[in-house]
Length: 427
Image (cartoon, rainbow, N blue to C red):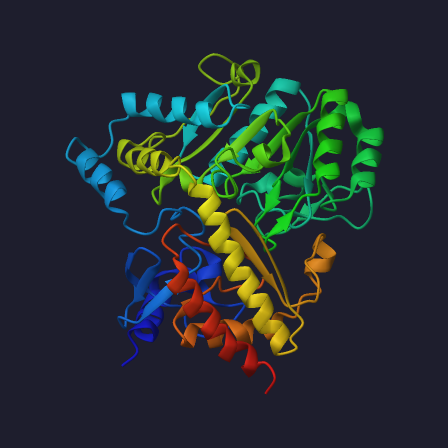
């Protein structure tokens, strides 16, 4: 009897859609979601005790692999001292010092519990510091489910965005301008029209929620120049890319300094830790020093911070990112070769331990190009890989993740599974 099906049916009785985060429901790929019972290294097991090679890694945090003994030990030791205090701890100071050391653009940082909290708070800080209301975001970038950021593009250039979720009043998004990712001219036009009203620009420098997409260097340089020129705040949303694509995040690869940065995922090592930080003069606007209010009962939770600190120490090992990047690119090269051998329109890209696979002939550089990917082919490929014990993101528009535990044997097994999966697309 399929335990996943039984659990899914049961879950739908008490939870909307049977899941606590929408992509887990397999709605875009079809079929029954896998309910995970345990994980170790590069693998996890479902309720039927079926083992899978895991390429989502809890959507990024499991960069050192699941249940790493050093991370587990740190959590166990923290638990014995208490679960939560609602008061400051030295562990929070250590975490803040580590983040500031590793990401030079961050002079001061505030810990929170989720990426949504981090981006929402950074946005509020930018508005509070500048006294302005308007913000710029980009089509295809996801910054959490805060009302002002759940926005899709308006009906034309320089029109403000429309709510992309029911329950979000238009008044909450009327100040959000949605532009095309990697379009420098639209940035120039937006600042020419509204420059003295724009509080901030928020961007994923390496996007991961319209699959993997790299920002072009000129695009980021343009927004840095315009923000400086017009007194607007540049926010890098590195909740996903921070410590995933490089030790200093995407900003270290592009050599571009944002004013504020949102972090998450890896800094919690699998437990709920996120953060936002940046220039000290901006952070001084935060309560209790300034008038921008933000608070959280579980912010800087000692158990979560222990997992995050252990992870941050592990990723500073010599050659950690060199090896991680090499394994990820090895996987991408293998998939490209398999697709070519089966004459399947396919491309792939990776940055550090993040990757994207696209069922189109060239790697997309815009949201519009991403939307031309063959989702039917991806869905068929996804299920074929799942049947072979390889778990990819259950959506054609989500990035994938490789951990330090994905060794040559695991990569080779994945590529072998892809041989059969690509062949099935020709039937």
